Length: 88
Image 1 (tube, rainbow, N blue to C red):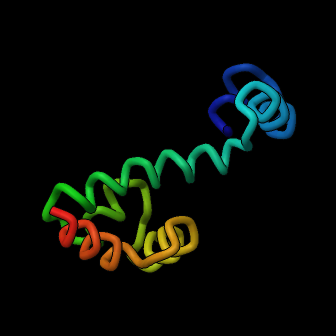
Image 2: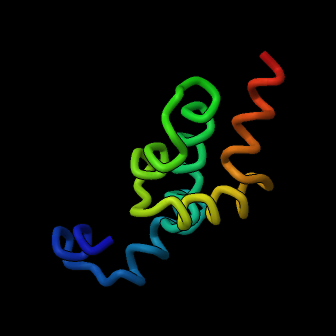
């Protein structure tokens, strides 16, 4: 949002409101959804460690990613991976 503020000379609030009216979700919620949508297939189809995957999805540390993933997916990343492997 900071980049958009500078580029278009709009306030962060104005950008967020416009984004939400156009997309139906806040920029933060959209970013969270994109990160989760990116993380799920990586957990299913790669052997990246959860720490590597955290960095690949934009998190600086494993704890932040694990908390986010569990909050939004209902289970820890390692549990999600193990459950997916049982299905294969």
